[in-house]
Every structure is written in structure tokens, then in C-alpha cells.
Length: 371
Image 1 (cartoon, rainbow, N blue to C red):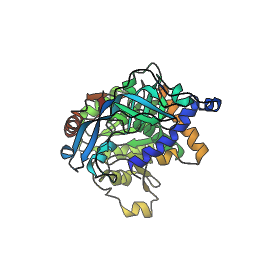
Image 2: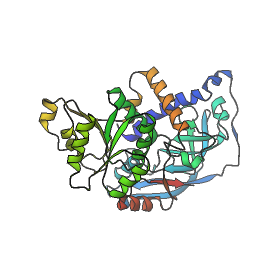
Image 3: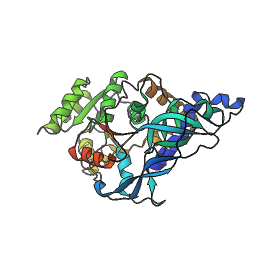
Image 4: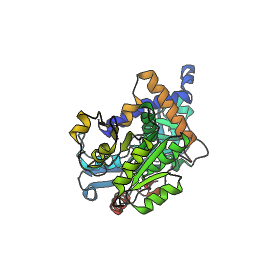
């Protein structure tokens, strides 16, 4: 499934969060549309005009359009911030089936400034929320029940813009390892924002993680977070170090977001019955270096991990419980475990700044669109 389809599925899961903050009251009647401040007639947003596999040549423009009006059951959110995730730039590379211009963004945060009517929509007026939708815009309309999560009062609204993708993935990764009988696993590209969250979350969950990085400064950053096991691929003997840790600690699981040769390389080091989950493609290369005998005779597995597949596992009741539990965890630890280090950009310089950040090879920072 495409990320856009996955985010649509995530919107369905948000229903559980909405019910948790007052959906039962929907039975008590309706409320009229309203707003808490004057809404401008026009707004600015980012759209894709022409896709290109080379991100710097994709044509992304800021345009002025009418400010959307919420219908019954919908809310209008004045956006504070929206992150640029690796899955976002994938949209810039491929011509959209629905044609141009394509409004951009997948998640973000802001304040509800208008309601189209309905109990829950009106109840959210003035509230800080994280939303899913076309968020690279000064205002966004979403369904109050399916597209918004309320935020804790003690977290600045702009710092909650990356509420969904990374935090939910972190919880899903740890849960998957636990459900597979593991208490320890390897994580590649471990100095990323998601990797740093994993280090902190694993400490909280009494899980052990072996962090694979590619530079000395990345290893130092993880040590400062309390990481115990770090392997640096810039060391000539990194593979022997990894093999030693796998044997010493009895590691059978790995989560990889690099693709290319890395999944197969790690899989060959794991003992019989080991599993590598691939959940990213930072190398932009197909998965390789898989030894057939590992699969045939040693019972090893390599498989994909998609956030929404984990969320929907086990039927609707399990899905609702998992969604509500994960959202509660993210709210509780939004300022600590799931905090992100952002670099800010504007509508006019987002593409340039993102390409420069990616070209620099910097990790541990996420670009954030501020309004």
C-alpha cells in the first residue's frame, strides 16, 4: 500500500482516540457551527506542480487559495507546524494519479479555530490537536472524529506536529519484537529521530537494543541518551563486532530502514530462526545479499513491516485497543521519549532546506514547516 493509503487507514484509527476524549457524548445531541477567531478568506499552501525523482528538481510551489470551510462534523485547524517525513518526499518523486496540483503534507498540529457543527466538532473548539491530512497549509479541514487527536496542555502545539508516524512506529517495532518472543534486537540507521526515540522507549520498556550507526558523532549522540550497545559501520571490523554481540546476547531480531545489502548482511549473522524486518529504504536500493540457504535450511526470515498492518492486526477490537493505548503513550511521553529535534522552514524555503538537510547526511534532526 502507498503511504497515502496507509495514512487514510490511520485516520480510521483516530476514531478511537476521538471517542476516548468525548465520543460518547455524541449521543446527547448536536451543536451549531462556530468559530473562536476571525478566519481569513484566503490562505497559502504548498502544492506539487511537477514530480521528479531528483527532489531538487521537483516543482513545489506556494499558492494562495480560498480558506476551506468545515462542514458538519468537521473542524478547521489553524496549523502551527507540520513535519517532513522520509515518506513525504516519496510523493514528490512520482506523478500523482489524481493529477496536479497536489496539496502536500500528511500530519501536523495546530489549534481548532472553527467548527462546522456537531457535538464533537464544537467540543474541540479552541483545543490543540494533532491531525492527519493535507497539512502543508495555513489552515486544514479534517473530520473531528476520524482525523484529530487532542494534545496535552503542557506541550507547545508546534512540538506535537510529528505525533503519528515516528512515535507510533516506535511502539509498533517494540511490540512486534515482544510478540516474537524477543527482548533484544538490532536497529539500523539508529541515530535518526526515530532511532533516538527507540533508545529512550526501550529503556522504559526494559528492552535491549543494539544500535547500528555510520559515524563516530552519531555513536556519541546515542551514548548521551544512555545507549549501551553501539556498532559503528565506519570501523573496519564492525561486522565482527556485530557477530560477537549477536552471539553474546543471543540476538535473533533486527529492524532495518536502509534496505540495499544491509538486511541480507545482518540476516547472515543471525542464528537459525532469526528475522529481519525491513521498514524503510534510505539507500533507495532493492533488498539484496540474501543467502538462499539462510531461508531454506536455517529457517531465517526477512519480511516487511508497515505501521498500519501492525495497527490492524487481530481484528477490530484489538485494533481499537492498540490505537487507544498507543495514542495515550504518545500523549504521556510527547515531551520526553517521543520529543523531536526540529529544524524550522517556511512555505517558501521548505524544498530547498529539505534537500540541503538530506544532502548533508545529517541525522537526528527533522525538518518542520512553521506557519
